[in-house]
Length: 208
Image (cartoon, rainbow, N blue to C red; front, top):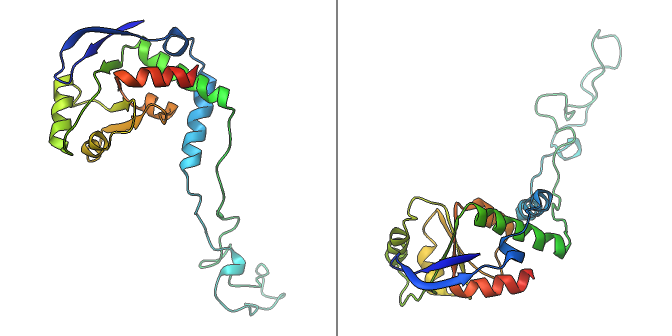
């Protein structure tokens, strides 16, 4: 699959790059995508939720009323979860949501995500960016030239570029990552995937 390389001014250049069929042209595996996205979202959870249970409520341990003869149900503690102000019955406790997946499955999921984007023609290849200064205005101009100002954009760089990353940081609909850190969730969550020319070789090397 061949794709035209686009300049930072939004114009197609004479150069074309070839996208590997083994990465951008496979039969997508939906279950692999599901597992990888599920793991990504689970691993982002802090798991710090906590509710007070019966033993942690402050209050008297005195028996509220006598056991028999009242005509009502037995009641032994104001901390009971069935009473107002009592503890939470089976409330949430701090826990770790992390789980692991095989490396081969995660690679398959990323290949599947890229293949979906390639089929829908939502992948754009641009020349490697060079920002002399950290300016959000320059990054917005780039998006405008590429006609992506209204899209949710994932930009993949071949290597770390602090000027580009910091220039995009204040834009809500844009995420900039390096080719060695891109994940399935980010690819699928974006409406357009913009790849720097040098990032293609890195991605194909990792996923193959």
